[in-house]
Length: 148
Image 1 (cartoon, helix red, strand yellow):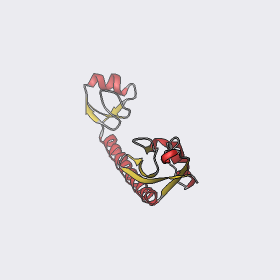
Image 2 (cartoon, rainbow, N blue to C red; image 1 turned 45 degrees about the vertical axis):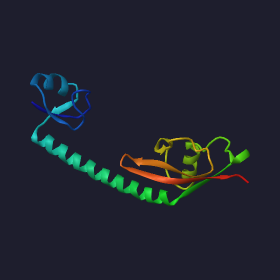
Image 3 (cartoon, rainbow, N blue to C red; image 1 turned 90 degrees about the vertical axis):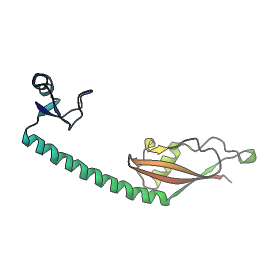
């Protein structure tokens, strides 16, 4: 018996998978509990149209992320910080501060998208990665200057 999974089921299949299962298991567990539907020709056609629709949406989303990436990479965020002897920075520039500055510039970025390897604790220009999508990452410049 062939079924199409409509929900993820650990160890069995993910949503959209078409699998061959034993008739009793498919009928009495998967279909009865709403994890799968019978893989009839109309259901398979419907699955194909859904997959094509999702691919188009993904392509559109990636194109939008690419546009945002180009805009982001043109920007340089400047942070003025207090320094001590030998231009040692007090504290560091946080992800929260970076997100706040990006919001001021009109970018809707949340803190989970900002990837920082190590704290920004020195003067100068630092590169920070913004993950807009799994396939689209922007690298922005952050300039840390001494407060006068």
